[in-house]
Length: 327
Image 1 (tube, rainbow, N blue to C red):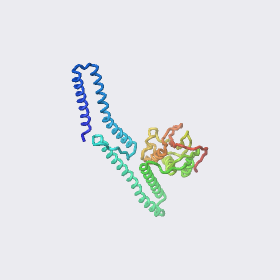
Image 2 (cartoon, rainbow, N blue to C red):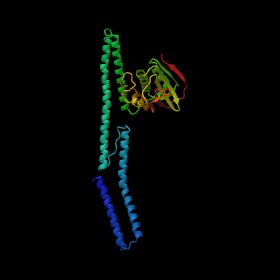
Image 3 (cartoon, one colour):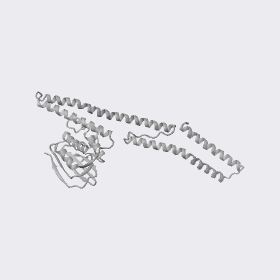
Image 4 (tube, one colour):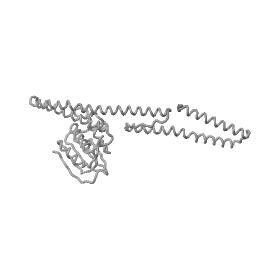
């Protein structure tokens, strides 16, 4: 198969040769007495004929390039299974094959990375179990302060493992698990009851979603307020048009306006963090879960100058207002 540029070059040479041959023929048939108008008419006719004849070749090229462009855009949008058809044996076909090979390698690397995270998280469960057993055995001999610190370290490590597992699963699965009807206010009330100094108010709003993921969303927001904010923590569930809005804030200053997007990145180290450590995957999972439900998560500045987290989730049902406060 000739290279594509040779085919184009030969097609151009052939067109010029046919044009010259047709011109010479017309000149010979008219005995050199061809008028200027006839010559111009013949020139336009030949140009149109060459354009029509060359259209299939140009369209074949552009059609394959358009398919390749759609494949690149699909891969860039996160569809790791995106591939394009390899047609012919020219440069465009080789480009399509190179794209497919690169996409396959990217998919393999991403899948391997996700599998590594999941396997590492599972492997961490074993030492955690042994540490818990050691803590139980040392209850009678260890001092209370040391034991409490060790138990807190275990709890934080266990929480991090859960976050890594959930993040890996969300990245590996394109769609959320089967959904159900959920009362967002009732779900938030159950999670708020786990924490001290949390006040919840709002409107019962029914939406469709994964209760386990939405429960984790609320819990991560409350945990973030507990670790990096100041009590009391305020939670509000409201309806705005066809959207359920969950708002969480506390008496702490919160992140700076320049950090409103950065706090949703995994393991971002906030300048306002009391202990100076990263915030893990908590807020990154909050945004991921919200987006999986067709909503979003953002950090905004309230009227009092403090920041608050606003979660939007679509399609609530009709409701009435109620208020709840934790112990």
